[in-house]
Every structure is written in C-alpha cells, then in structure tokens.
Length: 246
Image (tube, rainbow, N blue to C red):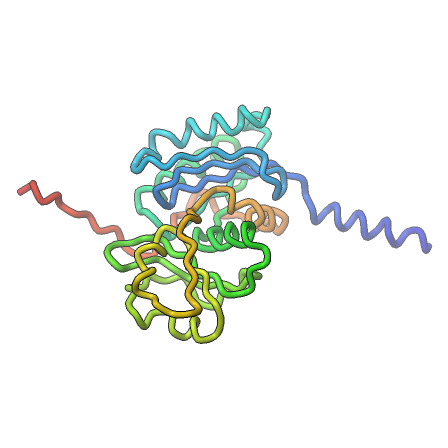
C-alpha cells in the first residue's frame, strides 16, 4: 500500500503534464514571429520586422520553423495565436492563419492576450525583477494599449487604451517600480518622469513569449471555438485617407 502512493501521484502528474508540439504565431505588431514549442520548451523561432509584410511572410515562416524542427504540420498538437490588442491588419492575418491551420489539421486553437505574452517575455528575460510590469503596444500619437501585471502575471490593471500624459499610471508608480516595456514604451519615456519608472524599450512582441502560457492552457483544455473566435481589437478599426488623395 505504501508503494502505491507515489505511483498514483506520478500517473496524475503524467495526465497533467501532457506532451505537446505547439505552434505559436505573433503578428500583433510590426514583428512577424513564429515559434515551435515542445510543451513549454522553445524548439525553433524565426521572426522578421519589415513592416506590412505579415500576409506575405507568415506562411513561409511557419514552413521554415516546422522544417527546421524536423516535424510535419500534422504532428502539431495545437496552434497558439497572439490574440491582441495590436495592429488591426496584423491581428487579422495571424488569427485567420491560425484558424485555417486548425480547420485543416483538426487541431485545437489557443489564444493568448498579446500584452500578457509580452509581460511573460520580460519575466523570462529578467527573473530577478520584483516590481510591476506594464507592457505597451503603440497605438496612435500618445495612445498605447496597455495593462499591468505582477511578476506572477496577476493582473493589477486591466487591458485598456490609454492616452499617456504626466499623470498616467500615478497610482502604480507610487506603489513600487514599474517596468514599461514594448514598442509603445519609448514614446512615453519623456512623459512618465518618475523615480519608479523603468523603461525596457528593446523588448518587443515575439512568439517566444507564448510558450508557457500556451502550454498551461493546453493542459487545461482551454481552447477557443475555431468557428467563432475573433481577434481582440480593443478599439474599432479607423481607416485613414492619404493626404495626397482627394
């Protein structure tokens, strides 16, 4: 009887820690990024930063990652996509590609908040950091898509669009140090002049930040309905007319 206890525990752990190849896509910003994970371990990553080329390059990047890993698309266990907020066009490309793969391969779809994955990427790179994390995705002018998390990814400020001025995030900055990260952080650096404000502008969205979050959802069977899932745009798309057009 004594010997059966560890066996029961190990079986339970095996059921919880399911083995999985997870393909991850992030096209929410200017970076077009594809990663392949075995469970939460990064196997392959390829990404480019060439503006509005996501629609042309994403499929090529997917094929490259899978080929370099020595597997086929059919061997995937799930597809994960960075769901937004972010670029309207980029999100549409990423989500439509992920849904197409899931339909064709009959694989489950996992969706991760882009800001949360950016925070996870920061945590991976800065394991000794103890303050709050405020990922920022550039919107227009002084507006950013943002949220705030603890180092355990507990949400302390919900995802929202913020027009940044000198008083923004005052309640967070009076508590402890705040790491402002992402492609929206650079334009706020001269506005958020506070002793607790720290800026990590080199950290950008990447599919490499999706692995841990995606694997957790995979183990929980927290999948999206492929037929009805849509990107998290946060704001309605606003088309602009070039100045040189009537």
